[in-house]
Length: 444
Image (cartoon, rainbow, N blue to C red; front, side, top):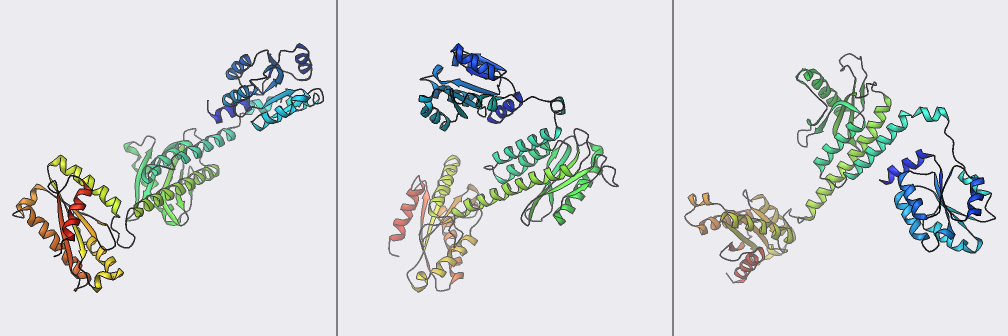
C-alpha cells in the first residue's frame, strides 16, 4: 500500500481506536473514556488488526510493549504512515515517551494526570448523513489531478520528446478526455505536428480533426487558452478546449480536448486544470531540453565546437568497433600548425578548429586533443577503392583537404599532419593516437 493510499484509508476510516493493553484496570479506565475501542493484549495481534483495517488511531500502553516499543512504532509507521500513534506512560517513563515522539509517535499521555485528555484527543468524529452521502466529485477530481501532477514529476528525467508525448497523454487522461490530440511545435518551420492522438478518431472525424488543428494554430499564435463551448458554431458537439504548453515566451505545443468521457460540458474548471498541468509539462520539457543542451556542450570545446579529448576518444572507439565488425579501416589524422607566429595566436588556433569542423566530410569526426593539436577520424569504406588507387591515396587526399581549410584561415599557416590506421597501427583509440603522435614528433 502506498503512502498516499494509506493516508486516504485512515482519513476515510473514522473507525475505532486500537488499544494495546493487558492490565484489566487500565483497560477498563480507557474504555470508559474512549469509544469505540478495540483492545488487544499483544502488540502482534494489534499489528495484524491494523494491517487488515485502518483504525482512527493506535494507543499503546508502554508497559505492554516495553523493550519492543521502537520496533512496534516502526512497524505501525510502515503499515499506516499517516495514522496517529499515542502512548500511555507512567510518570517515570516520560523521558522514553518523549523519545518515541521524536521517532514519530503523535503524542503521549502520563497517567494518571493526563487521563482527562484522552477523550479530548481521541473522541471519534461522527459522519453526518449529508457528508457521508455527498462523496464530492470535486474532491475526487482534485485527487485525480494531484496524482497526474505527481506522475508528471516522475517523467522529469526522461528525454525531451518522450517526456512531451507521455506527459501530454497523461494530462488528457487525467482530464477525462473522451477524444483529443496533442500538437508539437516544429523546431525549424515552427508549424504544428500532431504527436499524440487520444480516443477513437474514425474516418468521419476529418472535419473535427481540421477544427482542432485550426484552433491549435490560433492558440499557437496568441498563446491563450481557447474554450469553444458545446453548441457553438463550428465546434464539435462536445465542445473543444485548446491549451498551450507554454513556458515564459515559448510555446512548445498545444493540447486539444474534445469532450469528456463523463458527458459533462467543458468549462472553466477544465480550463484551469488543463492550464496548470500544461504549465507543469512545459516547465519539465524546457528543463529536459536545457539538460540535453548542457550535456552536448559539455562534450565539446567551447571555442571551436569540436569534441573534447575524452569524448573524441570514446567516439573513435565506437568507430573502431564498427570497423572491426565490417573488416574495414579507421584512419586517425593529427593536425598541428608548424612553429611560427600564427601558431601561437589563440584566435588563429580557434579559427583553425572551426575551419576543420566545417571541412569534415560525412562520417568524419574531429576533436581538440590539446591547445593546438586537432584530430580527425575517418572510416574508409570499401567503395572508396574505386576513387583511389591505394588506401594511402585516400588518406593523403583527406590530409590535403584539411590543410587547404587551414590555409583559408591564414595563408601563412602551414599544418603538419600524421596518420595512424586501424588495424595496422593499433587496435584501440589510444594506441592510434600514440602512433600518430610519435610520427608527428619526428622532424619534417
